Amino acid sequence: MTGVPFDAEFQLLISDGRPGSVAAIVSEPFSLSATAPISDLKFQFEEGRSHTIQLLDEGGQPAIGAKAGGWFNPGLGFHRSTGWRVNEDGQVVFQHVTDAIPGETTLTIKAAGPFCGRKMKLDWSNLPESIVVKRGIAAAGRLVDEATGRGLAGAGFFLFPSPSKAAEFRDAVWGKTDDDGHFSFDCLEPLSYQLNISGAHPPRIPFKENNRGILEADYSDVKDGKFPEWFVRGGGDEAVTIKVKLEPRSRLKLAPVSSDEG
Image 1 (tube, rainbow, N blue to C red):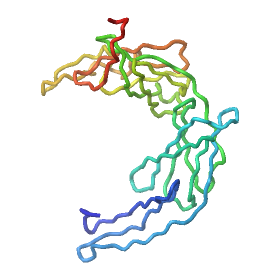
Image 2 (image 1 turned 30 degrees about the vertical axis):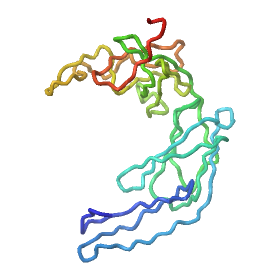
Image 3 (image 1 turned 120 degrees about the horizontal axis):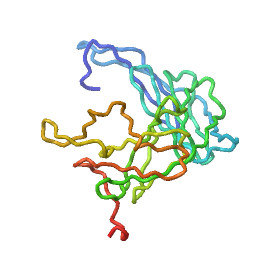
Image 4 (image 1 turned 135 degrees about the horizontal axis):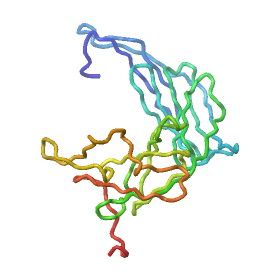
């Protein structure tokens, strides 16, 4: 390490690099000084055990197509995202598990594919054998540029449950349009979601010049931060068309002009 101040106290997080390992160690506090600029830290990972969590749908069948991730809080003032693979049998397999893994770990079943999202804290000394995940409901629509009527091609965006307290899974749901601006989900709950997309705004939001002469969206007249015209409803009967106003320097791409449009 370089640039470390002397006479300050530190702890290190050491993560195991073995494939599939969840092992981690937090070092004892140490400090460095001008007279002792080197600290000799020794640690060793235990072999531990393997553990498999079977993801099941509500009918007791393997949740094929589920996706997982997580957050690790080692107790050092920061969180770290963790990616865990769900295998072809709908299982999450942890390697080198011990009761001594520090901090808190949260397993997240992502709102993706046909399944709703879910979060749960893991107790490494008492891991579950299975977790039930709910199948979601569908919604579909299209993002359209207000000025040209053309779809937004390959545009990534987020859906936030609104109100969030009504949702079992309160994290954002990520989506992406196809080449013509269409999108679809099968992982939503039966409630409304507020769309959020970088580089575009609801058509009723005006652009004004800032003090540098650059046009930017002006939300000063928006009181509650809600835009019903940008809502996507889980379980909606019909596909929705959501119009957007592109920023002057937006990197969003428009779909090609179809033969019907001339």
